[in-house]
Amino acid sequence: MRSIIHNDFITMLSRIIMGAIFIYASFYKILEPALFAKSIWYYHLIPGLLINILALVLPWLELVVGLALIGGVYYRGAVLWVNIMMVVFIIALSSTIIRGIDVDCGCFKAGGSATGSATESLLLDFGMFALTLQLLVSKSKRWMLQRIT
Image (cartoon, rainbow, N blue to C red; front, side, top):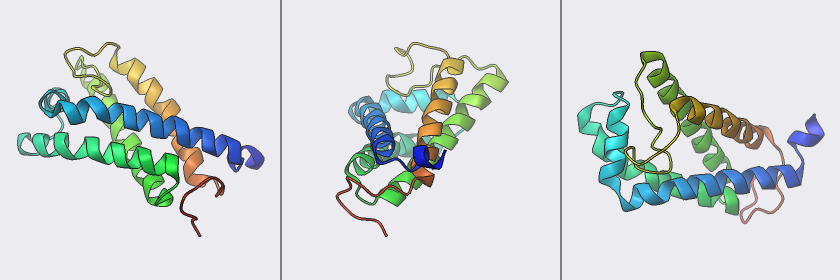
């Protein structure tokens, strides 16, 4: 099992997959922050005053974290941030399912045009969380622009 977790190729594949997902997820949110703010509002978890701030900051954080994962720059910080975001996303989606709120995740498109259920998004998030956990525990340092110690 350790040989799989610390494997350079598997770690690089996980970095590319998660980095690409986070970069892709950031694009519509950066281009259309008002629609993303509406998606956040549908969750009914964030106070109204913080929704616009979150809609402006979160996409840029996703973009920077995605680039850092792929490039291996500030890698441990990027891995920590991606794990924190995955936990928050899982909690938010679980909350909507438990409360019976019918909401699309708003992960890749604006809430009004997104397709797929919250349950499907939650299952996808658990799969992605498995990849981010692998990145968290992997000791692989290969193919990084900035060496970690």
